[in-house]
Image 1 (cartoon, rainbow, N blue to C red):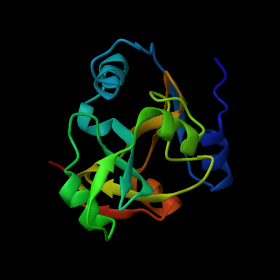
Image 2 (image 1 turned 30 degrees about the vertical axis):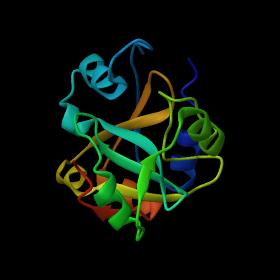
Image 3 (image 1 turned 135 degrees about the horizontal axis):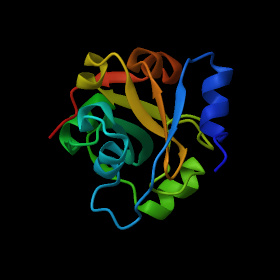
Length: 157
């Protein structure tokens, strides 16, 4: 498996230090993020999942720990909107250029606004999708925030 993806190229271009970690992706897993954490032997709170949502109809990328759920009400508020809903998988794939299970916030086809759950910043290092199913990148959460110009907010249910 190639470890070069649009996500890793975007991280390199932004000067973000990261390491790449492959794992056995299980397409039948109930929770892809939790399955990734288990495969990597990591605490699920340190393995962040990338979700695509709509706030007042506009795409937004949401980054939360893999063992948590997003509050749509809090996400709408963080995105300065009135309502939020999860994006349907085909639309998420079209907007990002990635397959569901491999969506990274980095190197998306069209960069959209990003919200990162504030609790993710409590860790020295976190894992995020590297732009391909079965590929994670490990990096500092502050670098994620800075590279994506992400809004930091409490968006957990």
